[in-house]
Length: 494
Image (cartoon, rainbow, N blue to C red):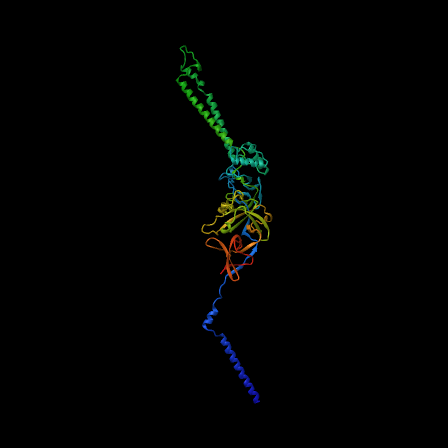
């Protein structure tokens, strides 16, 4: 038993010695001098950051988000009152202009259509560039009358000659047009009829005065002169009216002539007043009953009134039936764009359509407020395009610039009004696959020469290049001397 115990004690002692030795070895490996510790914390030696040269096709594009809208928006308002006469006189019954049939948003309006009704009278649409600004009726003349006559003829109501003078032929055509729409053309009002009667009575009174004056001339009272002996002979004979007038009869003749002249003048004035009034008396088109549009059909895009509202002020907004896209791009991208560039439009669900850049900068921004004609997408390149895109501040070339895109064939966008679309404008494409490097690899010397640095076998060398198309952070390069191939590593940073 004692021998076994001694062996156990010896084994334990040896184990302790081994553990102590191992601990000392571990501790020794962890102990470092200050110099060794500092060296261990130094960063590894820096080397250049490189990227491999690629060979691929390159397409440069400007991409933006846009909104599909109807083209050529313009506000809709009436040029004046509908109807004439008592209903339009301030303070009279029914004087206030009330909408009795409101326009309908989304409706397409063609030439000759009824837009709405006010006080039971129609507001009609016609095509023309001269806005309605006055009532048109007998005696009126001008470009607006000629425009009305052309519209009536297009609608099948012949006004006679297209003279620009509103005469009976035009009045008859207006009457027939209104009748075809279920309305009565605006005839002379009660006030007009009353005034016509007064003027006709004035002419009759002036004629009667003139006749009376003629019938009471100096010759009708010559017998009185005989009784006083004026012009009588020695034997009492008298010559009646054949005697030479004395001083009194001469004065009477002058007075009579003055009365006659006055009566004639009054008649002439009465006839002139009647003629002037009759020249404008007849069937009229009130200023508020026609709206001329530069191009028809139009679409009632928004309506801001309802039945019962007054007809003063804005009524809504009309647009053409064509679609366009409004977008905003950074000023740096806008400098690359020109009118006429092709555009690809893509909806969120993948529908596609083609478009064309039709306006940039101020031209595109102003179209929503003053558009009275469709946008002109022709003819501007070079410096004009730069001016169009110069809606940016001189101090911030990246400021956003408005962009308008026409869509000649709406195609799959036909039902996408107010939808968001992706706008992709192709600036150019490489001729097949070309060598491309990141823009960060391009270095320009003080002499203006362009180069890239190539790392081969741990050594750097400069390769002169020319640059071409750039897109998505890559640029096309061609070596002018030396070699540059796909897979070569070019330096993009240190």
